[in-house]
Each structure stands twice: as structure tokens, then as C-alpha cells.
Amino acid sequence: MADTTADNGTEQAGDGERRGDARRAAKLAKHIHAFAGKHGGAEGQLAHLGQMGTRIVLVGEDGSWGDLVAPSHAIAREAAEKAGLTLHDTFDGELAAKVRTGPYEWSRMAGIQVGGASDGGPADG
Image (cartoon, rainbow, N blue to C red; front, side):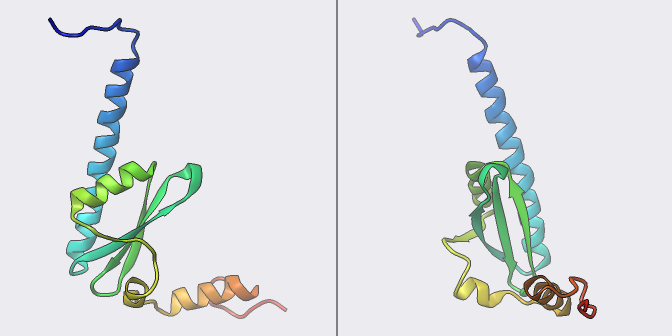
């Protein structure tokens, strides 16, 4: 005879949550796979965002980069595994060196860092 437990709804809710997590991971994996296909392959890194979830940072073989946000670290890791994404522990060294940035990113970063215009235009005052 099989083990049985009282059905208080928690098992069904847990199963539904796991199915939802699997769907989220599959959807993210599809986006990762599309990014990799468009950019000659990809590598990535998972960055914890606190309660917001986990950022999946993607770096294409052509230097393009992008990111996705998963609601949890477990879902982000599952998505990366489903997509066959090579993950790095940190975003430095070899992975960071592959990123190609353009004038927009440089002007945006400079504007934010030194209090200038974030659109690449001249700084106020």
C-alpha cells in the first residue's frame, strides 16, 4: 500500500509552483538560446539581485551583451542549464574582456559617474 497523507492543499500548490518555475525557466532558456544564436554563442554569469531575483548576464561571442531577470537563483540556474549556457562565477577577467561597448554605453556610464548628462550630451553647468 502506498504512503498517503492528508490533502490540505499544500502538495497541490507546491506542484503548481514547481510547474510554474519550470515554465519560467523554459521561457528564459528560450531567450538565452535565441541570444546565443544571434551572437555566435554566449556565456554568462548569474548576479543575485536580492528579493528581485537573479540577473542572467549574457555575453555573446561577438561581444554583444544583454541580460534577463529570473525570479529566483534556482530558476536562473535551471534556465542557463537548459540553454547550455556556460556560466562564470564572476563577471571579470576573460568574460568581461569579451564585452564590446559602443559610444552610447560610454557616454551613459560617464554621465552617471560624473554627474553629466546621461544621454551623451553636454553636462549641465
